[in-house]
Image (cartoon, rainbow, N blue to C red; front, side):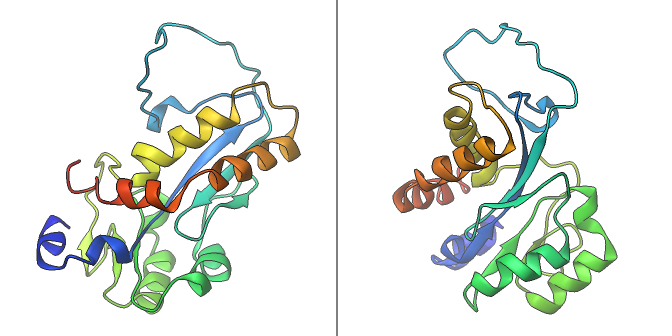
Length: 185
């Protein structure tokens, strides 16, 4: 990917960086794929209720979209994301196992011929077990979750409303700056 950036100054402006995150009403955070950097005490423990209602949120240039307890599939991408992407867009997704399914790779090959980044891509392969170094991971989810969980969330409707409000606070300049951070990361 860095070679593409070196060869084409507009490359990063055409990439639709995408990712999904789970938001729990209880405020529970999945520590498996979450990096927390902050000035507050990292040893503070907050108890969360088990089986808290949750929303899985996909976000990219065209997001957020809400999928209640589902994973993102080619069908959901086809219905919501693809129609809103420019013709020359390059679609990126991480190496999560569901994204490597034959049906997903076939869909991406049809929708983005030689223009998608991910596991099994003929264009740019996303390494297996690589750290997610995309703008949603190192900027967006932390920014959104900081705003969503400033006070306790009441229910799924409240959670969804807060997520929309937080995403709407992201400015184009913030996205521009974080997209160009990819090369440094």
